[in-house]
Image (cartoon, rainbow, N blue to C red; front, side, top):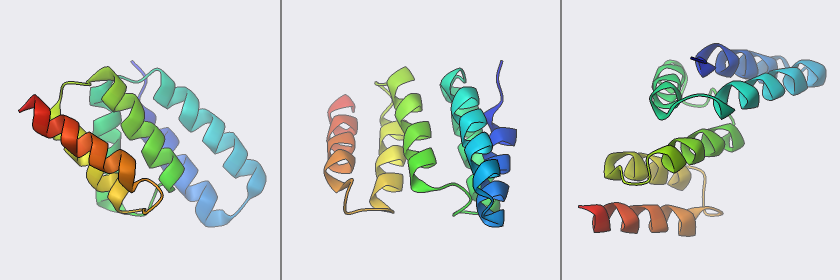
Length: 109
């Protein structure tokens, strides 16, 4: 099974170094690892990487990770709320999506 955690850390380091070539390579690797990861692996990566540094991943990477996890678990109200909370942290661009996730979570319960 793929483990997106090392790819997430590599992306974070590349962004910190502001090396555009490394950022591109790290982003490609992150997306590839994330694409084939299970929801459990994605959530483990998010929990581990964001606990170490809450801003370690850019919003696009977080949004993609939560989106892929939610697609795998559309009936998991806890996950939907977690994804909504993360979206709200970087709004207001995604506030409508976050509110929809919270509404769906409430409907599931």
